[in-house]
Each structure stands twice: as C-alpha cells, then as structure tokens.
Length: 141
Length: 91
Image (cartoon, rainbow over all chains, first blue to last red; front, side, top):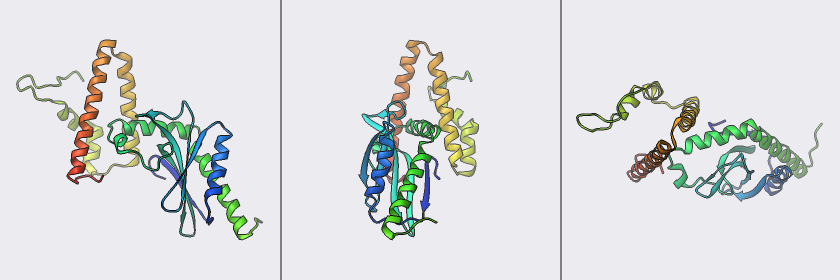
C-alpha cells in the first residue's frame, strides 16, 4: 500500500479483463457513481468512479477513485488510488500546483472514510476470481 | 509567531529562516527521507492551518491572502518547471 493508494495482488489470471471492469463499473453505477473505463498499455484496464460531493474539480477536471486492474506474474494486481476521472495520468499542470498534495490527501481521506478503496478492491477481486474460474472451469470447494 | 516577514534594514524576505527553524522541516532534512507518514502529517497540518487562517481573516485580508497564496503557487510551479527542464527532478 502506498501513501494514497491501496493495492493487492490476487492469484487469479484472467486474459480478458473487460468483463471484470464491467463488473466493477456496474457495482458502483448501482450506487449512483459516474463510471468510465480506460485501457492501460500494460494490457490492464482502469475504472474511474466519481460522485458529487466526494471528488473535487481542479482546472475543470474531476478527481476520481481510479481502480487499476492489471495482469502480473501468476495473477492480477488491483490498485485503488486518487486520480483524474477517465485519465490514466494526472496532468502536469495539476501536479505542479503547490496545493495538489493537500487536495490529493483530502480526497483520499474521504474515499477511505467511505471505505471506497476497500470496496473497489473487494469487488475487483471477486470478479477476477469468478472470471478465472469460468476460464479454467475450476470450482470452489 | 509574531515576527517580521522582511528584514527591516535590507528588505530581504525572512520566511526561509523561519522554515529552517521548524521541526516539520528539520525532520525531513535530518534523515533526507520523506516517509508516507510525514507526507500525510504535513498535508494535514497545512490544510488545518489554511482552515484556521480562513476563519480569522477579515474579507479584505482574506482577499490579499488568497492572492499571495495563488501567486506563491505559481512561483512554485515555475521553479518546478525550471528544475525539470534542468533535469534536476524527473518530469
């Protein structure tokens, strides 16, 4: 776990992460979050979620909880952290601002208090597990 | 901490000297290591101080303080950009 992100690596290998991203998006959409999906060059996918009141707008861009799901050796990595809605990288213009560290900490605190990061990791892990079982035909005992 | 911001004789800014005296700054300099906890603690300290400042300032003083803080942020951005251009810090 980093300063402003939560992550975990799970032992589930899923070739096509699109259905996993769909599961995560559906989960938060049902709670009135706005959601979007962004592909990651590593073959992974990023889901952004935001809802008014929790995530702040800076220079016309909205902060969001970005959930990155990526394939790693022997499994998948899931990471939830504060970023910009629908963007993989935070624009330089924002990171140059002296108050950005304060803003990112405040938004992260709000996300953590609502346990959004834990929820995102849990939902992604459950979906990865389900889709890896579908792919391998494995069943839980 | 009622101390002058500028040297009365030379007109030079004294705030850097006050920064050097602060425990929050000394801790970073001593071990040259910035831990996650230190970063979180400092962001919380700054947010808390800004909230207190906003509460006590008159509308006129608040307007001036807003201008100062914004222009300081611009100056900091300029400095970071220059350091990036000189490859002192990664882009």
